[in-house]
Length: 233
Image 1 (cartoon, one colour):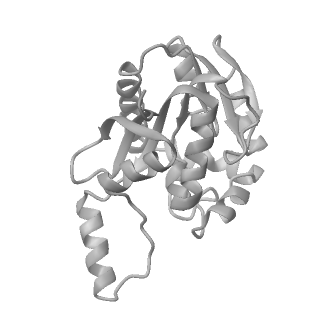
Image 2: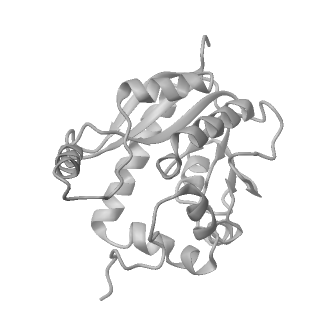
């Protein structure tokens, strides 16, 4: 039986945001995307942990009725948000990803308002269009400068809340990687943020950190779900 692997079609072959923007728009990548990320019991458990953390962040945010799921990808959480009672718009730069989301079992459930092709750097929505922008499995693909511009655009579109997926450096994996880099034994890039860098990035976009929810086991998982809001809110 085939298992998810590093050779899957939907696994990017190199770094760089411009490259990945094009990469994820491929129909072949969209067709393989869910298998690579949900195609084993371990991956499904990881996804459930992520959703649990998202729900925890949302419980601290008052007054959310409408959510922009950006990028929604193949709808991993779009239908789940609708199932929690939110009115949800899925947005993604990839038409092929949204086509898969629309065909998913939860893709047309009550509460899913529709799907809009959208570049995160120039969102096709008016100011304050939704109560919350949620962005999962995206920002770690983006360089810090571009990330601040995207966060600013998300802040413009949201009336208040942002729920964000960040990768942090407080893990054994980070210690191993930095050691190998110092010894000249690895050239691999592993961009991860510290707590100070997280606060600094959000502040540069006019945002403050309301809450950080850890995903998974301390020192082993490098994932945070971050609840942000405009500075001074």
